[in-house]
Length: 400
Image (cartoon, helix red, strand yellow):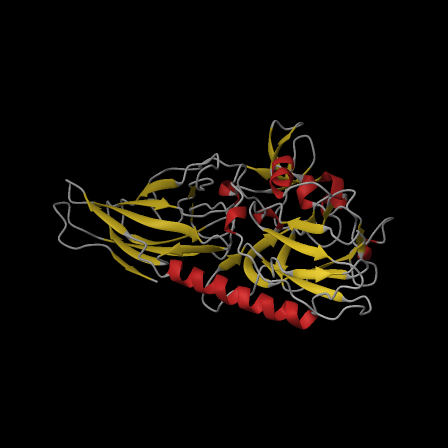
């Protein structure tokens, strides 16, 4: 997962009504300060590309003032999240509304991803900068006076953001992912004489929640994702799916992964995503001409980076680093060869400001690989077989 893959559609509806209640987790009163781990996302089952837009556990955790929360990013193929603790009185809906992920790039006239979302509130300890915090040796302190943002971290299995709780008992601490509206969780701060959750209890609750999330996602993924319409001229219009979802899991997969059609057929990709956006981009690979979220260095004009940001300050100065947003389709709507470069642009479900489908035609036989340029491991293969010009006897086939 690269920095460029960190855009979720603007104006998504928070799914707070779908948050299920979890009974409070009770430990021992009067214990010394402890560290409680909260997972951001969850490991994907083998052979799948699931992005868990969920914290584990999302509710039921109780802590004391002075306890430390360890937000740790699980290892998944294509996840990117923030852990953003909200200031007192701010609702998740207000946080998402005031932290739009797409903002204007005033000097270039286009759009860019919001630096306030991507960057942490405080620099990381490893930077040595003044005010740095967030690792186990120096947790950032949350006192409720303002939002405290981890910044956007990939699900690499190694990222952590440590936060020391410094609010009064009776506070419900809300935290969200600013990249995925609807990804919300709470921790309750209780009085010193009241028992809190133990790490073991929190881990058990997270495991049970993950099992439920995964079961729902596997059920949705297993549905049949293809529809064939016979056209009067003997060709077909085939509908395939570019991503689907449950309230807590974005299934970042082309469904089915492999399909065979006949030359002259048309394929319509639709998406049933909830919190993510996707593209259908030909061919698979890092094709800069069709990149929807390119990494740039501020300049006159801005300079396209040849790859992901290198180690150290990007562009030699982090204030010069930008992630542009190019949401529209690129290239022809007829994929004539395996090297034809074209993209649907961003697609998402309402109320996102993008279409939820895009169509390409395939006039010639061949094998065509494609991917979502937001989620690099979301890949599909389309085999186009030679066919007669007159009414077609066969039907497209699908696997995966």
